[in-house]
Every structure is written in C-alpha cells, then in structure tokens.
Amino acid sequence: MNASGRVNEAQIAAGVERALATLAPDVVRIRYSFADDWAGDPSIFFRIVLSDDASRKARLGETAERVEGAISKEVDPEEFGLHSYFNYRLVSELAEVPEPSWA
Image 1 (cartoon, rainbow, N blue to C red):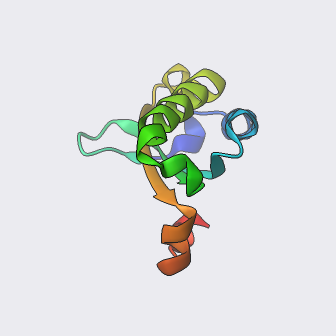
Image 2 (image 1 turned 90 degrees about the vertical axis):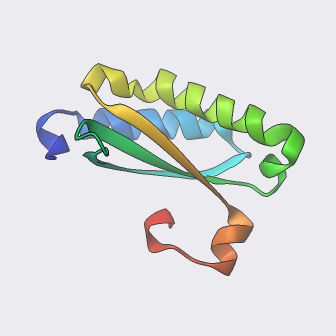
C-alpha cells in the first residue's frame, strides 16, 4: 500500500503528538506504520510503549481504552479510510528485548 497517496502524514504525525501529550506519563512513546491488513484493507498499525506503572492489572484496560480513544480523536484514521490496529509493549519489556521498530 502506498499510504502517502491517501493520507496526510503530517496531519497524522501532529495528531499522534497531541494524543501522546494527553496520555503521558502512562504512554511513553507512540510509533506507527502503514500497511494493508490481513484482508487487504489500508491500515495504520500503532505501536504504543506504556510505562510499567500503566500496566498494573487494574489500570491496563483503562489505559488501553484511553489510548485508543485519544488516538481515534486526535488522529481520526477513519477520516483517511484506514483501519486502526493497536499493539502495546512495556518499557521494561523493551529493555529486556529491544525491538528497533518500537524505538
């Protein structure tokens, strides 16, 4: 998929930064990439790094809900015809097993 032909990448980047500002300190970093999903639909895949504190069982569901809501509001992937996918990692997980695409 050539996302640059369908989306305003600067607008998406600005939306991600706005979302990150509202989600700190629970969210440390948000990265994303464009690709077709398993069904061939244009999609945006978010990689969200959470603080270890945000991952406590009582807060994890709440944090994920807040993250997805903020990104949907600030980025609005549907406006660009994109399906959204969210993947999460913890700071401590990435310290043990670094993944370059999450940096």
